[in-house]
Image (cartoon, rainbow over all chains, first blue to last red; front, side, top):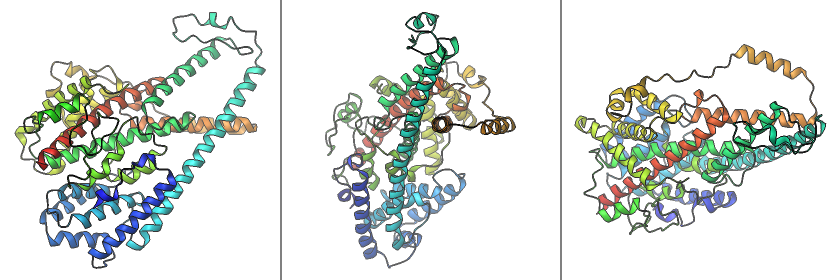
Length: 340
Length: 180
């Protein structure tokens, strides 16, 4: 069911407004589904238990087990509630598929609500998600404006500092710097040429060079200017990658009870393709970044998560202005607490 | 710098080696145990790719060594395992609160012009963010200067990308295998 919901459009391409509308749409659809499938029970847990009791001890037992797990983790950013959902989804693939649809819906709703960290009632859910999304969008814009204005202020200050410095003219500034240091800093006209400011300027240049490299590698950094914003994006990206690792390892643990990465039962052609950057045959969605094969969307009705995942590739192709919104929508549930 | 296929292959090999250590004790049938095993071995594999040249890799190995010393020793045989584990990391950067508070009070007494205020705010933001980055990157607290931190972050990001790519392809393959 969810494969239909997740359209070909990736999250990255949507603007914030479109994303809001999309979320709203999903909520409406899901509400319909849930109202059909449940007995109008108020709490999410009740819904889950309803399904659990119907079919699987497995489902229930893992749910309760992981619930304990979740409470065991400290008060980290994303609480254990997400982890329950993750394991549950993992187990769902092994259990019968008759309950898949509604539990998928649950899974999706849980994800959307994770940022509130509250088990919201059905009725409240729509507004909550919408307002939190809006808030985030506003905050993001505010932060950007703030950093822009602060950057302007900073540049103003440096200009005044330069002009007020009592120093000589310049083009010989470079000669000061021909020690063993590797960055050649040319002192500009009216700027100080004493060792301290030169060293500091050299340091600043190094830092900006490193930031440029980071900008290349972190998707979405081009839209943000200024150190603070970029650092923010970098932090989000690293956290996102870490969460992905957790999630993928969990998924592997579920899929692979023998803990074995054996190459035999996988078709050799497929496997080699992963490493030689060829598109994998059978993937329904061919992306340009071929060395990250996306999860096949429609053909295999396996984990609902597999449908949602492709939007979160760690590829440079995907410029994302706000890792926060997306990662919180999709991946906050997969974190088991930051270990770092 | 993108993760290269050679990096991916090396990572995969090391990871497999790590997982094989867990194979005999396969009665850990609970999902969490398996996940932990997978993640630990992946982490150590990733860190050992750097062979101790980067700070984050040493910190990561040290961290997993506290959780599972046996695994680490097995995996790092031959590559100065002992040295890595017992290596003394530089002292953590500690801020004495009293001193910081006093200096802040003194700074506050100075009057500031409007443009300076903005610059100070910007600096504060940047400082806060770098602190956040230190928390996220393993071993961040040990890096004394910003330049080192940024360099480590870059390396760490590339390694993480490798790890995610490989894991994802394995999961894909496993799923495809199940479907058939």
